[in-house]
Length: 178
Image 1 (cartoon, helix red, strand yellow):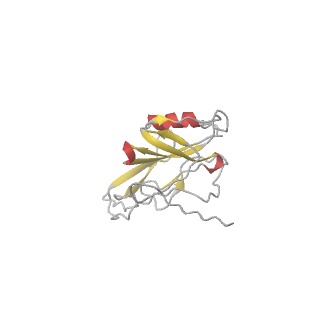
Image 2: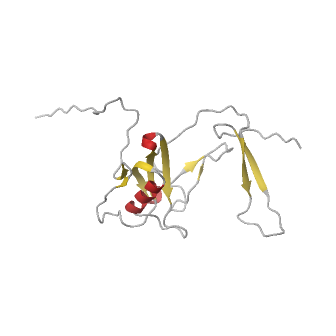
Image 3: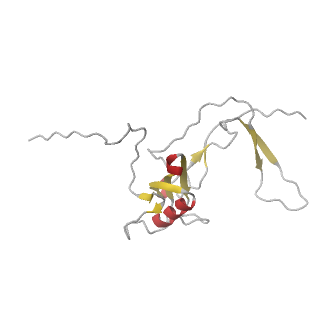
């Protein structure tokens, strides 16, 4: 015989956001507990969303792995890092080659990948968390000074580029008064 199921979220207030995750990394400022060996103990690339100050601040954190500069983190080590960053609650989002953080640098018109994906390039991932700024005024609010090299030898010069940004970090023209 057919079975009918009725369900609804039980919350004290209407939902403004819902999130699915396979692991709670941090709850009430404490590192969670994880099964001893289900891929949780191996250092891997990881992605998490975390809240600070009881939900008044948000962190999106990507830890690179499988690279010459980072092997990644286990769930417990990632959770400990998030607690050190001030997280009161945090959830695992994804990991491995899907760990990717895309952001718009101050003054840039477009977004770019700001971590090093373990696959060596971007992977098509059908889910994401997006934070979008409201349009700004377009009036210069600050400058992002960008050295064009990682290091400089004493006695030599270093080229720098400058990008202007408004209060939403969107591009803003820099007026040369020179």
